[in-house]
Image 1 (tube, rainbow, N blue to C red):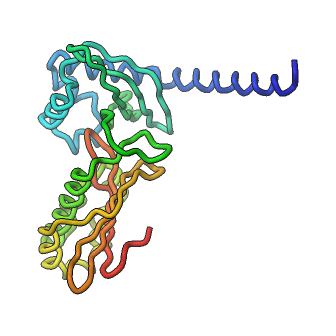
Image 2: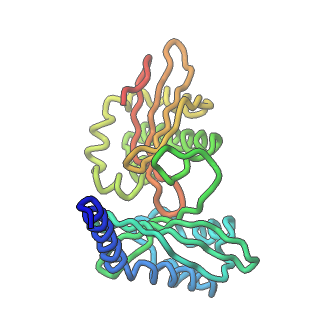
Image 3: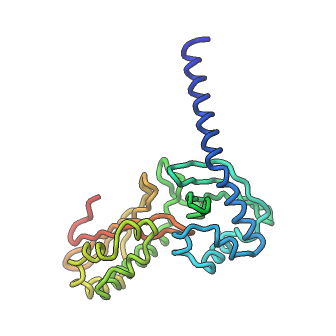
Amino acid sequence: MNTWMKVVLGIVAGISVLVGVIFWLTGDVTKAGDDFFAAVQNDDMDAAYTLLSDDFKAGTSKEELQAYLAANALDKIKEASWGGRMMTGGITELKGTITTEGGSKIPLKLRLIDSDSGWQINAIEKDTAGFKTAGSDRDVPPADRQKQLFRETMTVFAQSLSDGTMKKLRDNGAGAFQRQISLEDLDKAYEGSFKFADDFSSIAKMSPVIDSADIGEDGALNIRGHYPTKPRTVYVNQAYEYEGVGWKFLGFVYRVGSPVKN
């Protein structure tokens, strides 16, 4: 056998072993997905809710979860089948297909985290039409959703400045954001902005201009926009992490007069 062929076969064997190890390490992941949709199929939202991570539950109520499942035809299913999975640390992304009672097939992705009580679902994401960043399988939200996220975050930011504490902004953030920064540190980071509370309250009522949006290599959604205020434009960069059933705030930076530098 040629040397190059031996090398190729060795690589293929190595890949096969790696794939086998990943499937062995994440064997209980598919069970978590099956258990979740079995509970949904039986209209047992209490049981389904117990299979979610703390971050998921912190940002999504049972009622919101039920509404999301119904809106995306995921509440009346016939079966769930799982295939590809990718593991990074204690996080696994599981791809599969949900077959509804009407026979429709819905591509789906679950992100699960390994906890003391087993694998827990941290995010549920249904494939939708839209633009995707090269090398990424996550959708950039449509333009109207980008603007909605941008306005909602600006409103919470302005309210926090008016309150004299960034508690509302922090409480609306993703689980990772809340773990990484304390309220004390967040207040300190924005201490120079509190005096502009009235200005930002006015800006929050304006319609932003979205300049660009993309998914970064870390999977975060980055939205860049501005408000055409006089005499100088206010530029804002916002970041989000997909958690639960939607995008959750992850970062906020603004600059007056010139765009924020990445």
